[in-house]
Length: 201
Image (cartoon, rainbow, N blue to C red; front, side, top):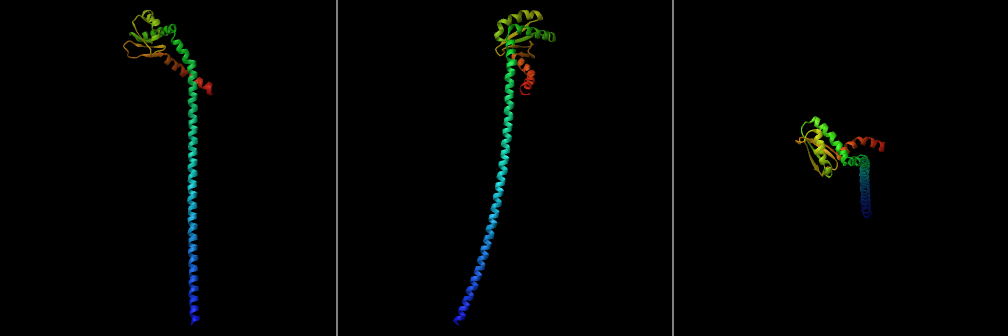
C-alpha cells in the first residue's frame, strides 16, 4: 500500500514537474519572443529616428549652404555697387560740383538754358541759384541776362543748392532742376555701364 501511494505520489510529482517545466519553457519561449519583438520594434524606431534626424540635418545643411551663398552673392553685389559709386563719384561728382560752383561757368549755363526757356515759354522766368554765389550772380541776372532775354527774370538764392540752378516759369507751374546733384546722377548713369565693364568684366 505504501508502495502504491509512493508510486502515485511520484507519478503526480513527476507529471506536475513535467507539466510545470513545459509551462515554464512555454512562458520563457513566449517571453523571449516578445523580447525579440520589442527589440526589433525598438531597433526599427531607432533607425527611423536616425534616418529622420539625418534627413533633417541634410536639409538644414542645404538651407544654411543656400543662405550663405545668397548672402555672399548679395554682399559681393553690394560691394561692387559701392566701388562703382565711389569711382563714379570721383570721376563725375567732384568735377561737376566744381564746375557748377564756378560763377563764370554757371553764367554761361544760365544764359543758354534761359534762352531755350525764353523761346519755348514767353512768360517771365524764375531762377533759384546757390546762395554762396549771390554776390556774383545777382547783378548778372538782373542786368545782362534780363537785357539779353528782353524780360524780367525773378531770382532767389538757396542754401539747399550747392551748385547749378533750377529754372521755370515765374508762375511756379513747373521747374527744371540742373543742380550739381542732378548733373552728377545723369552723368553717373552714362558712366555706370562702362565703369562696371571696366571693373568687373
